[in-house]
Image (cartoon, rainbow, N blue to C red; front, top):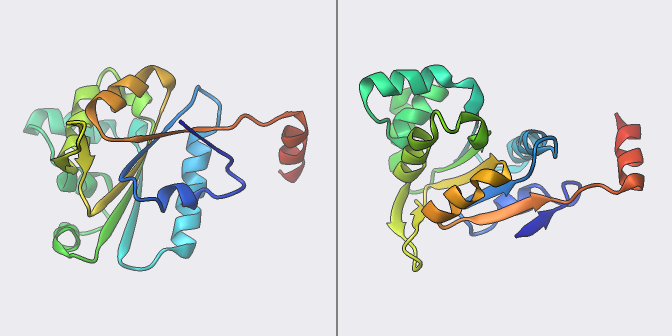
Length: 183
């Protein structure tokens, strides 16, 4: 497991060759805050051929409810349902483009489990297009996924996917004082 120090480089973690990165930490460590910071940094630095989509999984229960009525959603349908301001035709065009890359920031996998665990796993699996050498699913080349969860679901993610697990480094007393003085 890699320990992240947010002040050094949040986007450095995203800019690796790993297609699925999972931030695993207990409640209150700052997973959602880090996801927000990564999104902000990426929007400032990324080129136009990459589409950044941040989804708070806990806030899209309606998408999950509709999905259960209509059958399983695939990855692009899920994105379209979660981000209605991007037209479906544009999503399909970008998905077929060899240049377009989607960066999905999926926050709160643990918060939709167990109720929507299988649905979320199905959506993540639909992003995958091949098996790794360890016979685990690997995210397709047009996607980079950053997922956050709590420690009790780490094994679920590791058992299903080829994934890089990262964690936040806790702040010491001096770092806490410095951080709180910045606010």
